[in-house]
Length: 175
Image (cartoon, rainbow, N blue to C red; front, side):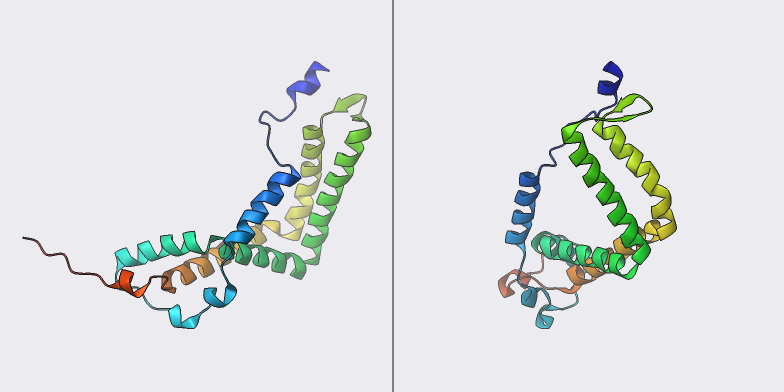
C-alpha cells in the first residue's frame, strides 16, 4: 500500500468542474463582439516598429478571449477533418472517463497490484501515444500552433485599437 501512495501525483491540481466553469465564464465575459474584432475600418499599418510592438501587446491583452476562440476553432477543424485523430482522442477520453467512474466504486488491480488513478491515466497515455502518432497528432499540434500564431500576430499587428487622442503623438525634441 505504501508503494501506491508513492506513485500518486506529486502536486495536487485543482481541475474540478467548478474551477473550469469559472475560468470559462471569465473568458466569456471578456469576449469582445465579433463585429468589432473584424471591423475592417480599424485595420491600419503601424507607424513605427515601437508602435507595432505596443499595438501587438495591447491587442493581445484586449482580444485575448477572441484569440482563444480562434485557437479552439482551429483545433476543432483539425479534429473534424481527421477521422483517425478524432477516433484516437475520443478513445483516450472515453477510457479516462471509464476509469474515473470505475475508480469511485473500487480500485483497479493489474497482476495483483492495486493501481492508483495517476498510474491508470499513465497507462492510458502509454497505450494512446502510438495511436496519436499514427493519426498525425504531432503535425496537427504544430499546424494549429503555427496557424494560430500567424492569425493572431497578423490581426494584432494591423488592428488599430487606439482612440484618436492616443494616436496623436508629439515628437520629442532634445533641449
